[in-house]
Amino acid sequence: MSAAADIKIVGLGPGRAELLTLEAREALRAERVFLRTRRHPTVDELPEASAWPSFDELYERAGTFEEVYQGIAESLLREAVRGPLVYAVPGHPLVGETTTRLILQQAPERGLSVQIVPGLSFVDVTLPLLGIDALGENLQVVDALELVACVERQPFSGGSWPLSPLRPALVGQIYSRLIAGDVKLALFRLYPEDWPVTLVQAAGTTEAAARQIPLYELDHQEVDHLTAVYLPAVPAERAQTVEALQRIVACLRAPDGCPWDREQTHRTLLRHLIEEAYEVADAIESGDPEALRDELGDYLLQALMHAQIAEETGDFTLEEVAGHEIRKLVRRHPHVFGDVMAETAGAVLANWERIKQAERAERGEAEEHPLGRIPAAMPALARAQTLIRRARRHGFEAVPAEALASWGSQLTSGSITEDRLALGLAALCALAQEAGLDAEQALRRWTLATEARLRRDKPPAGDG
Image (cartoon, rainbow, N blue to C red; front, side, top):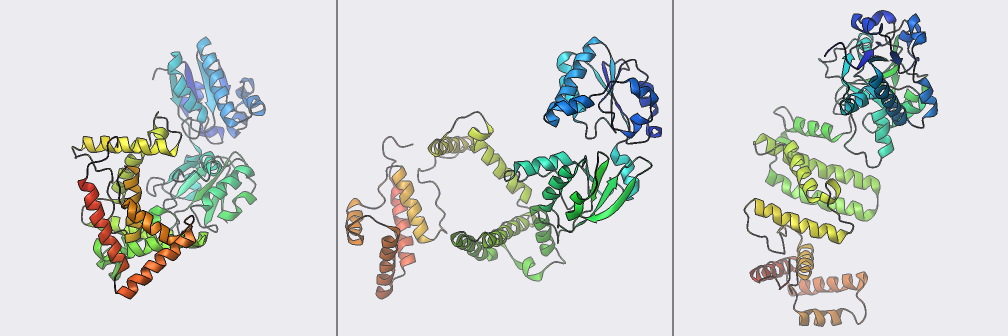
């Protein structure tokens, strides 16, 4: 980019003035230089910086950091219309510098050009203190404010955490105890509370230091704008993410894994999948959150096992399962991810039906029967109730009216309550037992026969 850019954003480096690049020193000789803040070691070592205006006062007046950063960007864009300027920021302009991002986004709209003059970032001077290879260890660099945002969005921040505990991470911008506390809470969701982390302070200055502490003590330390924390990778065995569980499942299925797990197939696991679904239902009925957590874990394990087996046979991967479901959810929720209005559950269901019909048309499939697909493996009672509910929704008569009236009058002379219904079902089971009949099988056969009859019938006029 030309040296005559309207705005030059210059990185001041992480600390000592001797770490300034030659290009940065040359750029700082400009007539008009603005500082984001004077609160930086390099500024203290530059005598000429005393004449440069800063935006520190804006930090005092604005209510939020978003207002500060937008205010700085707007001021600089207005100033640049009057003539070229240099904007000096701590570290590297493209490492944790929100104002740079805002200026790069908004300058073209005003016909202004921007040049980035790199500087050493806090990452560059932190790596020697830690003795690690950032690329070799797949180091993640994370903004503490992103973790804070995740905490603020709870309980709707699932899936948005900006790091994986299975890889090392460096978290910057931990500039207050309040931020440190929120970062700690965010990390507790992913890391063991006693996980050893390294607190890095004043990197790039003569007071640079790094020391190890347990994660739960993070907000007990003295921190400032030059504080960062390094998080070593957590072994999958101690992590608590779906990614770690997926890794454990792959390990169990590997050639040197568990003999029992390696022998399993989709078919041999089918019974376990159904059993785990019932155990999840039991946990829900019990109202015990810990039991539900445990049973959901067992059920999730089944899904991951089937995905792992499918990957081994070349059928599909877990990522493909997720991707397919994501696309389907987005497509079927245009009222959330698009511009369609749906303010009631009924409107949502109507949208779903239209979308599913369009999907079938795109695939060249025949129009699906209004009853839809009812899984054959469902328990007979649940399957019968699903069939009856869908039949009624579309105007079909699944149970003859005279049979419904006759049995209803025998069951109760008043309103049907859950207890009376349960007693009636139990009585039918007892009668089946006395007659030597399998109540489950009898209901299943009735459901299959009724479903076949209804599918042969044409939908009632006006359906659809």
